[in-house]
Each structure stands twice: as structure tokens, then as C-alpha cells.
Length: 217
Image 1 (cartoon, rainbow, N blue to C red):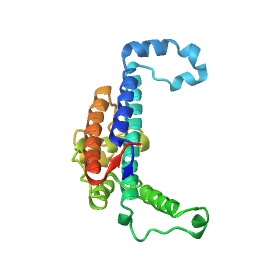
Image 2 (image 1 turned 30 degrees about the horizontal axis):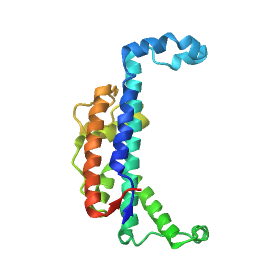
Image 3 (image 1 turned 90 degrees about the horizontal axis):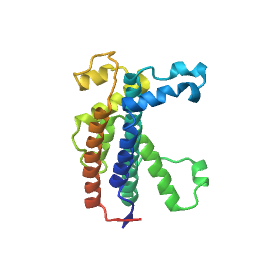
């Protein structure tokens, strides 16, 4: 038996908590926050604060997206760990550990844990497409089709690496964008992505439960 909490429920709970954060993206809240700039923030730092509601709303929306997708990646990582712990025979046979790493290990269980963590890092460092391929071909878990999730991942990459401007990969995936266009999400955009993530997680977790005998912690 594999012991584990319902990872999909955990992710959904985390996303639900972000709904309250997104609710801060209202003009009334911005009016209160901006009126307190002088008492909350030193004068020499106030030019870094949002100067109007549109910028403020975008910042809240982008922050919620980044955190939500971080929760999503943690869910994927934990699914990989859970499946590999239950079925270690599907680990790649070419994984290697050094003698120094072996010296720090006390049991066979720890050796397996180290190999699994190496595998999780390798998988999650890959592209969205390579992770999807790993789930299907190595873990035997169908990757639910969701162009919205792929677009969300590309948007996240643009926010982090391209000053929140659309790059060629995002434009190729979603023709509504143009190269160099500023990405300014609003709360409803993030809510829609959150719905896709919830459906995805429930689908994947139901497959895990069918494959593995799961017990609650």
C-alpha cells in the first residue's frame, strides 16, 4: 500500500486560498493602499510602487499566477515521487550516485529516495512537453489535453524571463499575442487558468488512485 494524502485536494486547497489574494485586485483596495504610501513606504522607494489601478491589478494577477503554477509544479513533483516510490522498477537504469553520496546514506530506503529525488529534478527541469511525455511514457499517466495550461506556462516564463512581454514561443502557441506585446493579466484570466489546473489535477490523481493502492496518512 502507498500512503499519501490526496495531492489533488491539497493543490485545490492552495488554489482556493489564492482566490482571496486575487480579491485584493479591486480599485477600492488600491485606493486605500495608495493613500497610505507615505506612511508605509520610504519616499525613496515609492517610485517602485504601482502608480495606477491598472498596474496594481496586473501585479496582483501576475503574482497569483506565478504562485499558483508553483503549487502546480509541486503537485507534479509529488505525483512522480509517489509513483516511483511504489514502482521503483520504472526508474531509469542509467541513474548513478557517487561514492560520497553513498557514505551519507544509512539504508537501502535512503538509496531509493536519493535516486527518486535525482529523477524528480531531471524531470521537472525539462520543458512542459517533456514532462507530459514522461508522465505518459514512463508513469503510464495520460496527460489531460489543455492548451490553456501550456499557454499559462509560457506566460509564466515570459513574466519571469522576458519582462512580461510575449516571446516567439507564446505567440506560436497562442495567436492572440504578438511578439513584444506587454502581458497584463486580470483576475478573471488567472481564475480561468486555475479552473484548468483543478480539472487537470483531479484527472491525474484519479489515474494514480486507479493504478496504485492509496491509503491516507
